[in-house]
Length: 100
Length: 174
Image (cartoon, rainbow over all chains, first blue to last red; front, top):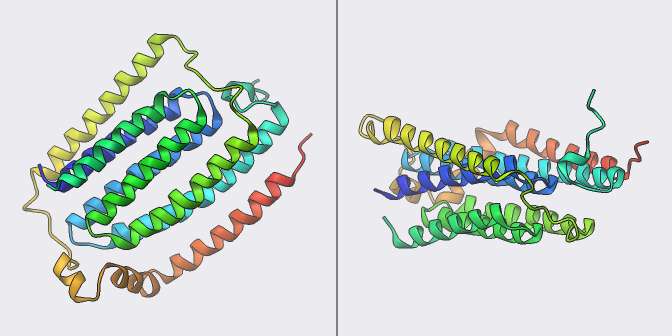
């Protein structure tokens, strides 16, 4: 087992845990943190594959992904503040006004 | 394989599990910060210095500060979330997660490890990158020549995100 296999297994594990955080936790802020963990796992996988293949495309892609993740978390957290202002809670089950 | 990478990977796996099961959101946020720092360490150890620095500055610096700041702003201690589901749902989800991990590991073995020799390598091997002036120089050169339109578009997207966050936070919905 070499370094890149270990890093790929770590990426798969972090992806799994991030998916469980998104699915199981009931706070909207925890869901956002789970999304960050998923993006981080994908970044690790991209960088390790690109490094072991002798390319730089994965690293450049990760640069753009990190920028988009920063924009996404800024928008997501301001939506979260609005949610708290309107419903008085950030639990995912409290925002149910869209149900038919 | 390097023992330091094994230690960093083990610490980040433990921190991720702690993030999943912690009751207090601030504990989860600090565990996520630890995972991001360990990731930056792994990037640095495999020789990706520019990505490691960006990970430290943008992810561990800016995004996590934003998260911890909004947890404090919303005062979430009172409604710390526990697992209110039935235990069956929790164990079902964990089983599904193990299934996903197994599928990824199987695909890694089947499509990467078995065909390792057949995969063509690119031109940027470690020796070539050192000869060209280091990791940061090579990445920056590609970023400002081959990918400069993407770079400009991403800066525009950041500007739109700033304006959108201000508009969303000021707006009153009725």
